[in-house]
Image (tube, rainbow, N blue to C red; front, side, top):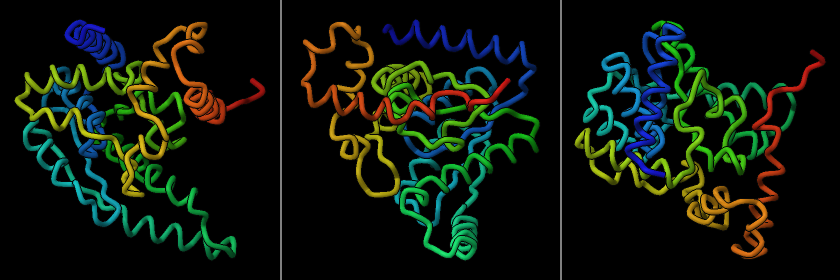
Length: 248
């Protein structure tokens, strides 16, 4: 992939979407990670001042200073919505309602869904749209929350792997005068203190090479253990990538 050419393709696609749907502006969550930073820069080039960033910590967020640095350097209109009290209240009410503690896995998915609710409330109020910030690598192995970070009106980086997002991010960062560390930051789940790669048991580089390799060549290029891990995560998360089934 040639980064500058891909940026040009994305900008054409975004501008076409903007004109075809009369999209006046966009709202996105600013996590301080590379994906939301790259999308913010892409959006800024199309919508200018009509890009609104939202920081949504769940109480204490150790790296929230990165989010503040990003909105300041990109000159984004923004606000902070702390979801801590909403998270505690809804989990407490659920626990009372079902008579048992909410499972750890369910707890990890509540914050992303509260954040998406927040983004859509702000977007509808402003007359804007929610722009997605998830990449292909995360989607491929299901490292997303259904109806959480995987919910959006449109997404300019959904076709790009994690490493490809970093490639275009480096070029955009040069243009905007943003430190490279914001677009090469190690992805983490923001919950366990572990990186995504620690949780996976393999690297994004390996995953991305696997994704971009023809299926008939995979067996000869990757260890069997890696292939099995990726294939298992991909199969188990199919429901996250497909539209809900109906009888229509």
